[in-house]
Length: 325
Image (tube, rainbow, N blue to C red):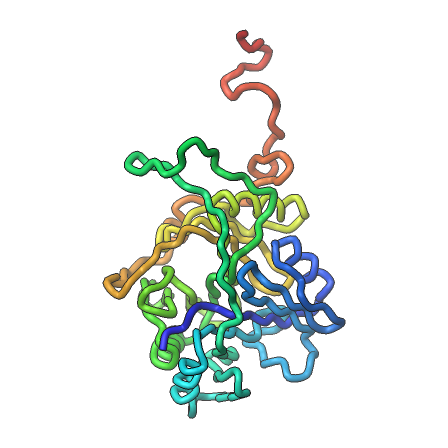
C-alpha cells in the first residue's frame, strides 16, 4: 500500500521561456517542448512539467499562478494502484483515467497516484571520513561545476487547515507523521521506512493556501554547493543557503523559481523507520536552520555574495607583508 515518493510535479506558469531556462540551469533534462508545455526529467526519470496557465484541462490552482497545480505520487505496481483506486473512491474530486487515480486534497490541490515511471540509477557519491569511520582512502572528495538532481525529493505547501490536510494524507494515502510543529506544521513521509519527509504542510497565522517549495535530491553535500554556485553564476537569486536543517539533518540551498515558490537542492536527510517516535518543535529560526548563509555564495568568487573576491594571499597574511619562503 506504500507510496514510493513523488513521480511527477506539474506547474502552471505564465513565462515558459524563463521556466525553460531556469529548470535547464537547475540540471533537469528537457524531454518535451512545445508552445504550451515543457517536460523535464531528473536523473531517475521523475518528471517536472511546466504548463501554460491557460491550457485547457489543467487542474485548478490553490493560488494564482505561477504555482504547482498537481502532484503525482508513485506506486510500484498495478495491484497497488488498484488498492488506491478502491481507497480513494468517494473522495472529493475523485478521478480515474485507467493508469492514474486521484482526488483533491482539502486545500484544493490535485493529488494523483500512478505506477512509477522512475528508473533505478547508480551514481557515484562522496564518502565522508569521520573519527570512527575512514571510508575515503587515497581519494579526494568530488567538486561539481553544476548539479544534476536525482529526483524530486519533497514538496511543501501552506495550508489553511493543518489538522484537516494532515488527516487527509494519513488516512487516504497512508502517510506517516515524522515530526511536527504542533498546530503549525506536519512533516510527513510516504511510508514507514523512508526519508524524513516527502510532504511538509505548514499553516500560517493568516491561513492562506499556496506553494512554499519543491525540493530536488542531489547525491551529496558537494553537489549542493556546486549546483548552487552554478545557479548563482547563471544569475538566479538565492532565497537562503547553503545551510543545514536540524530537524531533518539535510543540507539545503533555496532559489526563487519562475515556476512559483522556491526550489531547493537537498541532500543527507535522516532515514526513518516505524521505530521512529515523532518529535515536537517550536517554530523559529534555529529550528529551521542550524546555520545558513543569507544571499548565497557567488559562483565566480566562491565567497559569500557581495564579499571581496579572493586573492592569492594566505588567509593569515597581513597587508603589505611578504609571504615567507
